[in-house]
Image (tube, rainbow, N blue to C red; front, side):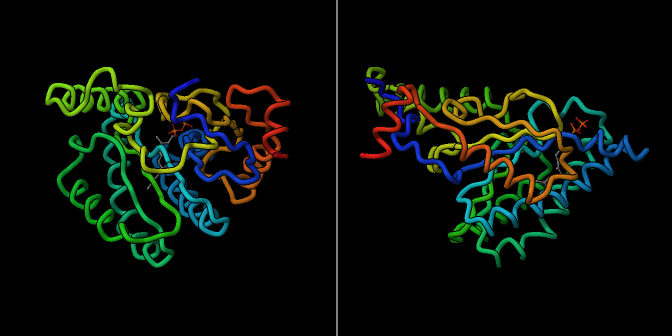
Length: 254
Ligand code: FPP
């Protein structure tokens, strides 16, 4: 019997509770229009608003967006600066609307590399919305899946060193508690836009049983209808979690 907390037992999946999106294709969207890449990011911020609204309307519990990966620092300095400004201005511009819509904001990633202004604003946005009970919107910024696993390992090791955790008690269930998003529902559906089919060091630990969905749509063009198409594909799949198809059918009719 697996000790794996990530093995949900219920396979009914007409609607995902937790969706994560790699918002890819901003640069290509801009290039197709002979615009600078940063114009694609600005248009991408509008798509973020559309998709957040769609998730609120559809009663999705959690939406996790990959806004800036640990690897994105390698981009041209000017593009990184513009992306940072865009986060700050988008946050400032949207926070009231998000709060009124009962959205709870969370940020994951190593934020120490961000400007003190951005770090401060991230804290304030989380505090302001922490009691909201609607959609939890998680923004992954300076996040990497390997970083998440390593920071979890460091915390677990510190607890072992301090005598709070015995190495023999370290199972995937106890380890899971140290990873980002441990307090949120399991990740049901991973969407990547922009036509590429890879994970790009996103939520590596959390993706263990997640359904993967790849869309050709460039992120600035992504719509509520595209989200519905992804959810419909999700609903049509049989999630087995290691069981046989017959066992899943039996469980569903039990
Ligand atoms: C990937 O497209 C996108 C990013 C690295 C940035 C995502 C940022 C936003 C959508 C804007 C604001 C977000 C928030 C949460 C406020 P790419 O540049 O790699 O596109 P390409 O593959 O076509 O070059």
